Amino acid sequence: MLYRYKIANWNVERPQAGTLKTSLALNKIAEIHADLIVLTETSDAMELSGEYPNSLKSKAYERTPEEQWVTIWSKWKLLEEIKTFDPFRTVCGIFNTPFGDTIVFGTIIPYHMAGVSGERYGNLGYLLWEYHEKDLVKQGENWKKLLEERKLPLMVIGDFNQSRGTNRGYGTRNVRDLLTGILKDLDMTCVTEGDFSGRHLTEDPKTGRIRNNIDHICISNSLLKRMKDYRASAWDHFSGDGRYMSDHNGVYIDFDI
Image (tube, rainbow, N blue to C red; front, side, top):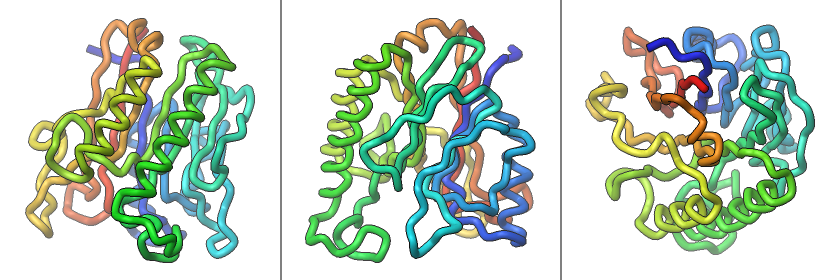
């Protein structure tokens, strides 16, 4: 079946200009050829404005002014940027898509060590996964407010830092259950849940392991029900000849309406 539209998502692991790794990632993005793609842990080195004239970038930290934690790149017209609860790790806007105005919320949910140690979040005295849980509650409140105030379908796309649809992989039962409950309350579905290994993701040639996907696309059921058919898929974090493009695999959904 030929699908008409494609939404993609990829953590590109802080790319630097002029490197082979960045070049490979840019080539892969061109190959994926999505209508809208959310990049996380990205930077000015990922310049896509020629193909994607509409973009939204999260606010950069002083220590890394050339980096953005989240950028939304879109071929569809950006109608409005919407302020979020955290302008550094999230970004949001309304896009005029062929299937109607849609809210797109790009995000990074903190990883298990956030607030425990490390410079990116600081040493806040948190326990493992505590920041993730606290942040997920705030994000859910933000998503709910958007849905109530804007009355439009919502897509939440980004690095969720948890495997979904399985109790194996990265994350705990508590954080998975928390997100499951939030999505249920908001009448949304995570379309990238489940195991992509074998069919879509293959063994890393250096480690011999297959990644557990932690990057997701969640969509309002009101929009999902309008899709005649959709297919969720993923691509490896390394090229066909085994060279790394990132430390994360990418995901996408293609569909027709």
